[in-house]
Amino acid sequence: MSLWRSIRGLFAIALCMLAPLSAQGVTLPDFTELVARQGAAVVNISTTQAAATRPPVFPGLDENDPMFEFFRRFIPRHPEVPRADPDNRSLGSGFVISADGYILTNAHVIDGADEILVRLVDKRELRARVIGADARSDVALIKIEASGLPRVVLGDPNKLKVGEWVVAIGSPFGFDHSVTAGIVSAKGRSLPDENFVPFIQTDVAINPGNSGGPLFNLKGEVVGINSQIYSQTGGFMGLSFAIPIDVAMDVQQQLRTSGRVQRGRIGVAIQEVTRSLAESFGLPGPSGALVSAVEAGGPAAQAGVAQGDVIVRFDGKVVEDSGDLPRIVAATRPGARVVMQVFRDGAPRELTITVGEWRDDESAPRALRGLRPQASPNKLGLVLTPPTPAQRRERDLEHGLIIERAQGAAARAELKAGDVVLAMVANGRQIPAKSLDEFNRWVGGVKDGQTVTLLVSRGGINSYVALRAGE
Image 1 (cartoon, rainbow, N blue to C red):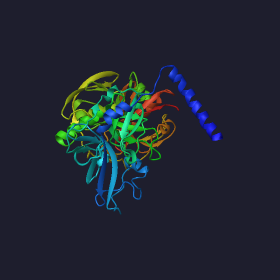
Image 2 (cartoon, helix red, strand yellow):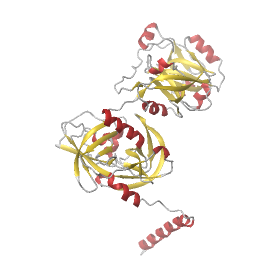
Image 3 (cartoon, rainbow, N blue to C red):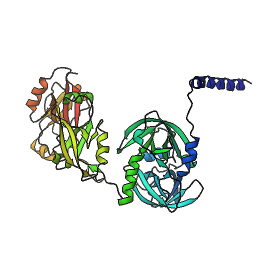
Image 4 (tube, helix red, strand yellow):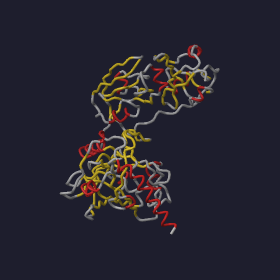
């Protein structure tokens, strides 16, 4: 009897919570019409991979385990080892974008598959062939031989608003056509090693098997492809990420016409503009992408881009955050001539640049090694030494001072022994670190509490570091 009273009490509390909404005429959205109208275009995808050709993600971890999808998407893969089972099946989702059988899904859903089987809402199962897949964006285009198929309606993800309701349809854990709903949590998210996709973050429940399925707005339009989750358990924890459909459609069009995706590049290393860096460079606010290095002979160098420039516009598009630039540049066709606006020496200027082509096999800069420390501390807590001629040749240094030890403000800014100070920024002007005496004289004139910005090279990668003198 006490259990029944408890249940009635909880029901009464729920009614009280809903009462204010009813009084104000506010109702929750009804997704039934959307699901009935668009659900038929969503498909289940299963793949078979032979044991001899498929590298397991984690030896000993069953693919039905909820941790499997998390490890697959966020942890580096292990080398190929033999499998005991003759083949392996994985499940995902997809959706029909044309009545003649073209289907969008995630690249990781079909990765390494020997056979792809698509199950439609009417229970038909058809083999699919791969038209193309792009690992960088995690988009794949596959094709089944069919006609008159129901297809989705595409929407504009740029019109999505944070807080707006969205719906996912997919096959989590193999449960076909499961419907989950939530809201847009954020837009334009950058994820580690995924610089070319401005992800839509939602709190829609996404689990293994949802990958590749559509994300709908309340109009029943597809605005994204559900691609990833962030989880510490392998299951849904409220953080889901979808590829905007305009990005996916551009990728699939290139895959359909040429079998590969071309992306632009300009040959710069960039970093975020913090408030301290903005103050040092004389910027009105912390926006844009700060150029920490320029590739010799690259498109940016040929256009006159200099180290210390802050890129604020590219091809007419505003660069609000450093993460915006790789996506904007990547979306620009190689060979295109575009106008780029940079902030230099306290004033904006325009440069015309011919965009190059991104290659996935480009090598990373080599690491620094063989340092010879010797010097004395200065006001920033830096112990510096000039490089020897051999070190200059080895590291291809025109100038710079090598850090022997970092303490105080320098240590708090995470500077380390072996880093090379290439330049200092004062009153919006960049001064090369050519002489130890000159550098220490400049540091000696800095007031306590004043922000000092240094251009530092570590492992062949340059970045600007802001710190406060005397702290």
